[in-house]
Image 1 (cartoon, rainbow, N blue to C red):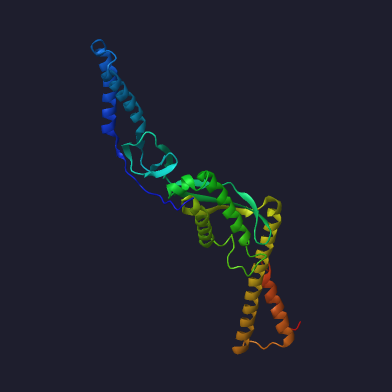
Image 2 (image 1 turned 45 degrees about the vertical axis):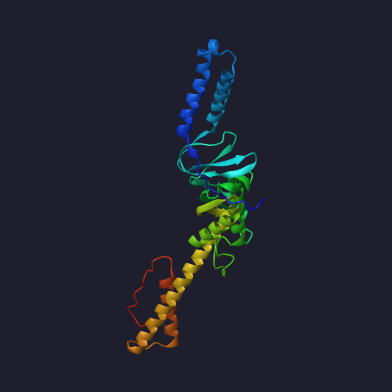
Amino acid sequence: MKNVEEKYIKPENGWLMLVLSIFCFAAGIALPIIFTESLGWSSLWYLLLILTLVSFISMFGLMVINPNESKVLTFFGKYVGTVVDNGFFMINPFIVRKNISLKARNLNSEPIKVNDKMGNPIMIGVVLVWRVKDTFKACFAVDNYEKFVDIQSEAAVRNLAGSYPYDNLEDENADITLRSGGEEVNDLLEVSLSERLSIAGIEIIEARISYLAYAPEIASAMLQRQQATAIVAARHKIVEGAVSMVEMALQQLSDKDIIVLDEEKKAAMVSNLMVVLTSDRAASPVINTGSLYQ
């Protein structure tokens, strides 16, 4: 295909041509009937017949364009231009017209099963807001631009999912994950779709991941793994805090000379404090009314 660019044209107003066509059509029918006896099959009768035929054909050149719609015009295979102005117009009746909507459209794809970067099967779905920006490309660069959007959006989603892990469970060094990437992942998806669909003259207004989850066959195992990871992380924080509190208690007892403990009593105190601070249940204290060395 040669380097042909989209061009906008504005045809003639259709109301004047409509009135002339109706008048000539009516005259071409009425006059021969009225003056048949006086004219016979004279040249005037043939002229009126031709005028009627031309008027009838010219009426097929009338067209209406609604807001946010366009018509791509071709004349015997040659691209004439695109009409985007709304109104009532008259064009050559032999020009072929194709309607192209310029309205924004939604594509809410069903979740598809793909493998992430780590090979885990996941379910992912996207929602797109798109519209036709270049009517020439949408009409002539691809066979069906609507199906082209569907297929290329799925290809972009598969490519994106295979480039990043679902989360950081298996790839702790990943800077971007599908689960926590948020706006960054959506921006990457939008850029990828814009590059893929530019050949069809499609503009991506917005692209979002609408559904993201592990595939059903591994969802239960991954949920248990996430829970275990969360429990370990929580325990780590609890132990870290308990050690800090025990260290602070021993330090303050020593600095203020409240009590002098030998190593055995320090070990016992540390043990008791760690049990109290890290236990899942509330501790039941035992009050010692005797000597510490009993």
